[in-house]
Length: 251
Image 1 (cartoon, rainbow, N blue to C red):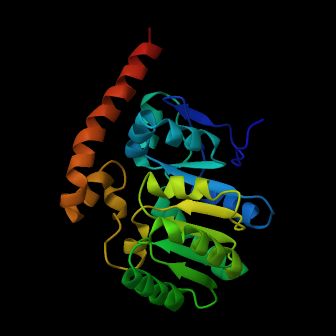
Image 2: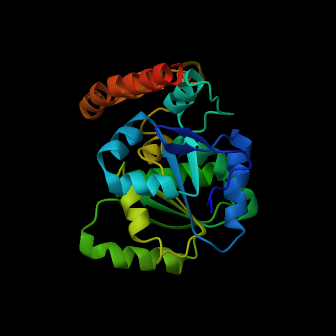
């Protein structure tokens, strides 16, 4: 039985599920989850995560059983090339930003896990200035020892948070969420990569005019030391796999 939350039929890319949604539909899906009782894992899928999933069976399984899989632009492009167009480009940081006013309005408590302590403090200051009714139930840096994990899970549960944003990068954030799925009492957990730096104002989000294909280059220019190897490895592989799938489909 499918565990998907999207109101639309799922698409598939390289055998991995992708939910076809508009941003409004994605926000509404998360909103419905927050009103329920079950746990839901939301994953943003992009070229890098597909590459990682191809080389890591544990991540591959996590991606396949996630309740909501939102597409970043590379996946939207790939599905268009394969003649399986998606309804929208969502992306992790975009969905996080769109959820904040909903959380502010409906008073759902949120917990931020990840990044450095000073980043979290900047994030808290900026978010509370913009959304004064937003309930930040708790925060914890992403730099901790494995022996602290039970303590962190207990802190999240005791905070009463309904939604947990985890900013540890992939695949660490996805593994962490799934490892504690049965223990966490939040209703939604979502890995958001480096989004805390963006929301805190340390890094700039890609402007609208580069979102349609140039987002990866914009990120690379901001953080070349950490990203150049990733893009050099994953981008050519991704384009090759998409074009190969298109050619095989035409035979």
